[in-house]
Structure formats: C-alpha cells, structure tokens
Length: 283
Ligand SMILES: [Zn+2]
Image (cartoon, rainbow, N blue to C red; front, side):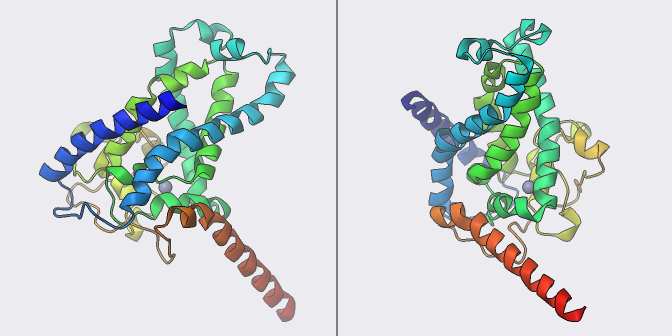
C-alpha cells in the first residue's frame, strides 16, 4: 500500500512538470485557468483512484471470476492465478501485456458506450464528464463504480483466456500517463494516423457539449473501434471548447461526487414512478 502511494506520488510529480510545460506552451484553449474549480477534488482523485478504486475493481473481478474458476477447476491459489494458464501463459509477459491492452480497449469501447446509453450507468459515468475545465488532472475524475464495472468486465474474459493478471498491470504507469495526455489541454492529433491511436483532440471531442459530438469517440486508445462501429468524430478545422454535462448539476465536492449516483438513481426512480402513475391515470 505504501509502495503504491509512493509510486503514485512520484508519477504525479513527473506529470505535473511535463503537462505544466505542454499545456503552457501548446494550449488547445489559450489562457485556460489552472487554479480552477474542482482542482483540489481532481488532485484527490489522483490518489484515491490507484489506492481505493483499483482495489475495489480487483475485488469485483475476483468475485466475477470465482464461479468460472470453480467451473473449470482452476486452483484458487495466488501463485497459480498470477501465472495464468494454457498456451497464452507461455507467451512472454511483455507481449501478453500488449495483447491485453488491445483486447481490453475493445471491451472498454463497449463498456464505455453502454455507460453512455444506459441511464442507470450514466449515474456514475456523469462524474467523469462533469469537468468543465478539461485538463490532464481531470483524467482520473472517475467514480469507483465506473472502475468496478469497466475493469471487472475487462478482467473476466482476459483472465479466462489464460492471461496473467501481472501482464495487465505491467504497463499501468504508461497507460495512466497516456490517459492523462488525451485529456490534456493541447490540440494535437496524429494526422494520417488519427484513426489508429487516440489523441488529445480525439478524446477531448468526447467531452464536448456540442450535440454533434454526443455519443462519439468511446475508444480509450484505438479509435479504429470507433471507425468500425460508426462513432468516430474528429473535425480537423476546429477544437472542442465547451465541456461538462448537459442539464445536470454536479457538485465539485469529492464526497458529493461519490454520492451523486445515488442522487441520480433516486431521481430516475421518482421519474419512473411519476410516469407510471400518469399512464395509469390516462388508461
Ligand atoms: Zn464518456
């Protein structure tokens, strides 16, 4: 736990310097305030996400995997679980890690898309979209339920295929830094390769309030999934400008954001009941 905190702290300090320079000299939105609303909350997320959300996500994956492991007769012993199994476990760990990233991004595309389409799941994904000033710090503003759902669903098929969970963790500092990069206030995309690898311009459009950008750019790393499934959107002549959630109010208080899904689900339930009563009266 202490090790994880130190690693997170060191990574956070390095990223503060790197993105401090990038956002200062190559901004997508010039003069975007740095000392902005929700800054303290987003810094808190940088430490809560790896310390708490990751552990909750691992616990969720373990609970989901348990019946499958019992069914296929895998031993429930830590060393055996960490080793993976079958022909895939024989592939070097660094190569397993690369394959896991690709498969994980395909699953991530669909879990992200479902988060947007199902009102009950939007209750927690709205927390991630609530940042009105989008910069590298807002990348990890993610409700723990969000992590539990998407990481839990990624872990089940990946581990059942025989991959080692260590492979999934191998590139996590690089992936965390890259996720921060695609939220950063910089205007870049990869030109002719913009359909292959997610860029800040690509992902910042996913957060844009303009209706033309709604329901677009779900992939975390490989926009090719958006191209294949018809959700790719990256205009080259302009940059996204307005971020946040339409018609909803979100507190910038950390505890308030943790409780937001409960408040949202209560409102959904009340609206559902009111509609039901109205239909009953009319019939
Ligand atoms: Zn989203």
